[in-house]
Image 1 (tube, one colour):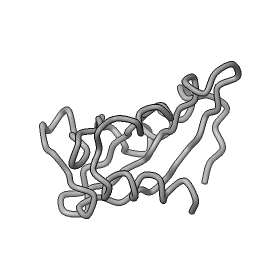
Image 2: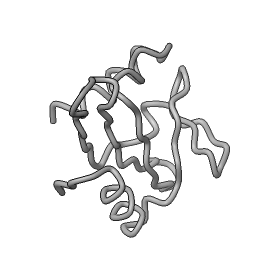
Image 3: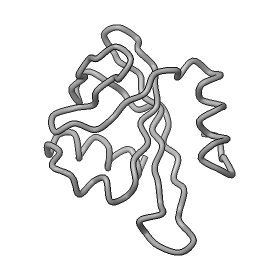
Amino acid sequence: MENYATKTEAIIDLQQKGYDQDFILKSEGILCIQQNELIRPEEFEITGTYRFDGKRRLSDSYIIYAIRSVENDIRGILMTSFSGFENNISIHLWAKLAGSLHS
């Protein structure tokens, strides 16, 4: 796993490696913005997880996930703040994302 100094460095490198789609959290999965496709937790794998701790507040801390859809090989990036886990997401999605932080 790469160690990136900044979020920008991580995003640029991942995009150069083919992770060119953008994902956002939804309650039951992640939404690929460009494809307008909802991908459920069992339909994707997390190929990389990168933490960036805020210097002043926990709300300044972010996690970047490199994600690959198992079925159609959509590759992209999900970036969320630590507080993003406070949103109403399913226990299955939460477990998948949180579990990748400990691998």
